[in-house]
Amino acid sequence: MSDKISPEKIFNIGLGFWSSKVLLSAVELGLFTELASGPLDEETIRQRLRLHPRSSRDFLDALVSMGLLEREGTRYSNGAEANRYLDRNKPTYLGGIFEMANARLYKHWDCFTEALRTGEPQNEAKTGEDFFGVLYSDPKRLRGFLQAMTGLSLESGKAIAQKFPWNKYRTFLDIGCAQGGVPVQVALAHSHLQGGGFDLPPVGPIFEAYVASHGLSERVRFHPGNFMNDVPPKSDVIVMGHILHDWNLAEKKMLLKKAFDALPAGGAVIVHEAIIDDERRKNTFGLLMSLNMLIETPGGFDFTGADCMGWMKEVGFKETYVEHLVGPDAMVVGIK
Image 1 (cartoon, one colour):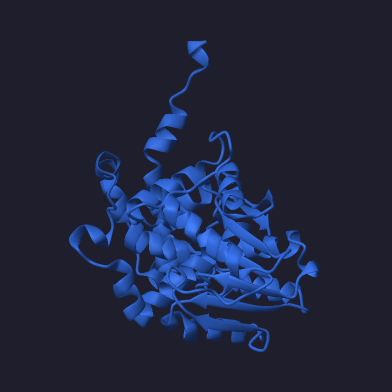
Image 2 (image 1 turned 90 degrees about the vertical axis):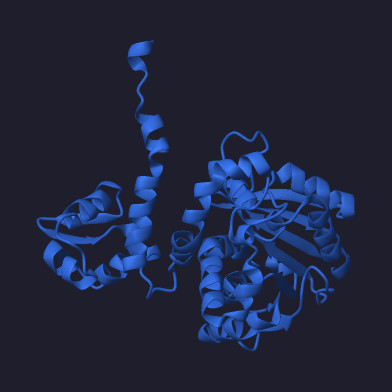
């Protein structure tokens, strides 16, 4: 039995930050965007990205070994996933979340052990800075954050557009809409829908520009407000993506009750997150996202589908179900 045991898995996990940082730096440098127009040799890449010759070959070949780049002879090109999701010039770009991870989260996770012992956030709040206060007062930082949220939700938005029975409804509202990634995907797929996004006022111009770039300004409108304090506009369907996990249990239930009150009879709420599997054994990403909420928030945590359905029923929803979306993400649906 001992002959079949290998330390490979332990090494891959324990030193996983090596491969993570290689990817994050490649995104930061714009490598995948540079290669989107065609294959390049090492010297050309090195010159364009201003890399030192000592490590450029190892850097590129490490990405080849990870399946993110391909190499034919001496020329490198994007792998299929990198070409679709990591080219900044494509509408499918998901790299915003990795840009934020590189700029912020990577260093905050250095304090993870302290977070486990104290239960306290380890982000900017640790030094007395109000991250969201600063974020929403700085247009450049805010735009980057909202783009990161689009990267996190874009593929789920496409799946929600296909898997939810939108033909039964006429209007929808995305609470905490960020840049508008999910509302845009839903509206693109269903021309009969009128949609909206509900978020803090500084988000408005960024949301409206993103919606306009997809030709949807007549059907998808921005509604300014604070979803923790204000009553959301009434709608047939209310969407909350990567919102509930920011808050403690009482706050989660409060937000679900607000959604319930804003919906008509037969209306629906859609909660989409990296929903943890009910046995809490398989969705590693969902569990790690919950630990990220420990780093980022005073009381936030991720949850299972059973957890969320229980909260929905507690605030009044009569029917609930869970449906897988894409990758680690699923949606929990409640019908009033």
